[in-house]
Length: 283
Image (cartoon, rainbow, N blue to C red):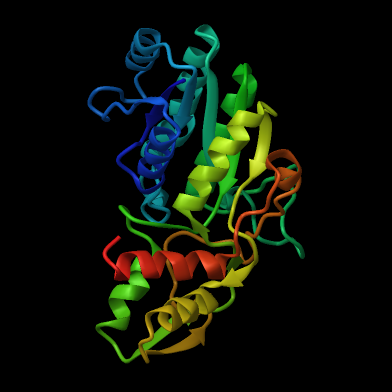
């Protein structure tokens, strides 16, 4: 199998590359200079030349707060880019996998979101990612849309790494306790993605580690996993205002993922423990 991965330098992209290499695939991972997904000619030329069986789009504009002032950049990368990829994949009969986000939802639900619940983003980042989903569906062909959330893992800026750094610098941390979601370890996500793709059961899916928590509880788990004694105290979102609004509840119901791939992802607690152990032991 030949697989082309966009955004391979990012936190998820690098794990996807590693997973497919482990599975014996011929993995192509062009740099941004070699294939800018917001340039249709580059996209069409690169996919036409490589003729991959599969394109996995991990390229994205992910700075949630900065997107509020860089709306055009967010929509180019997260909206127009997926459109170009979908067009090229349809032309060359290639399966497209597009990574989306929990932030397409407004957080007003009283339960984890199902895959067909109506999206209503409350920030520019979420709106741009929803645009990308819509373009992939509009163009058609064989595709997966995989929504995920609260990513952590090696090779990128993430909340778990931030807490690990702060625990070595401060005796006390204040972390918001009124936003709920599902943390996701990129290594687990990459495995589940590959298994889902193997199923050929195309469509939209939610893929996160199991369970729901808050940023505060996640931070406490990270500190606990390190064995350090840093005190973590809860606060509210209003205590730390940011440019972009965040959904209060962005947890997503994984149904029917388990029925398609045959298993549920490990709990977020287990994932945090494994990741902290991995980086503490030097990989």
